[in-house]
Image (cartoon, rainbow, N blue to C red; front, side, top):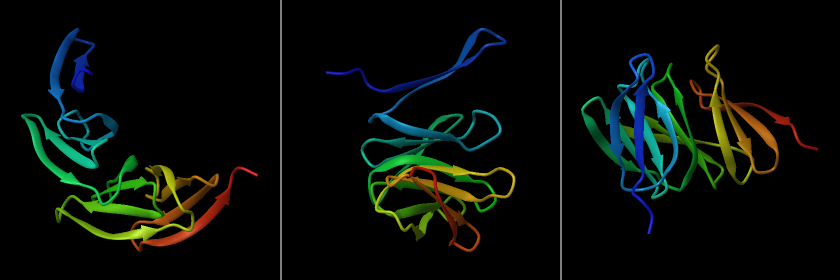
Length: 148
């Protein structure tokens, strides 16, 4: 068997461990939701997103499909998940529910990134393109051919 997944956070200036968390499933990706370590979201291999606060595990929800990458849009409060489908799933953290997904032209999405400058959402596809979305309007903005 394997050891249960765990996360340890260290404070290097104090040479000490801040906290240690154990999870039920392997971690695919994680996102820090606050300026410090106090709010974390973990995308797990069992199609779940686990939220942790300073005191420990806070909430757990399941995604519609297996996720490959996780991103946080601070302007709208959305946690976005991309995976093997063409849909960009948006979990609104203020409302606590999934919103209507944004649909990409490609069949599968591998990664997602959010620009801190203007909030544009970019998703890397299996076909070697990058599709950009405006999270405020949920509309596709453009597509870049990065692999020929």
